[in-house]
Image 1 (cartoon, rainbow, N blue to C red):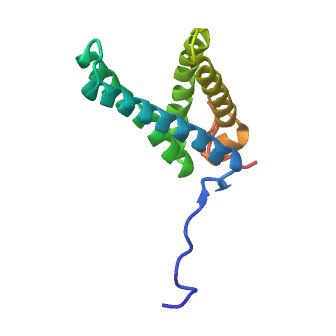
Image 2: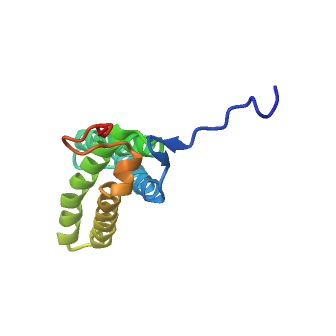
Length: 152
């Protein structure tokens, strides 16, 4: 088989190559998913090996966080692959992160820096996800728009 017969890897999406904004959004969403996974495993391990007030509640909380981490992780994978469906779960994740960040900011503890970081990441990801270049790269059309313009 010659070099001309080997197909090149597909890196373009619906409307061309993946814009950097989309890549950055995917990275931020993936970081949130990884943070949820780490927090869930941490709570789960503490619930099993430590002495929590309520072991069942700690284990349930840890498992819940690990399962919730699947949403941003799958969305990040879809964003990297320029799948149009992935923007919805990614935006939902950011919207859900904002009240969590607000509650962390109101705490009188070391949770305040975590709240600041979460708020910055969530707002930055939202801005990147609703950017017109991102929307176009994902092949998302606005309401009422046709896939092809009518010929005059």
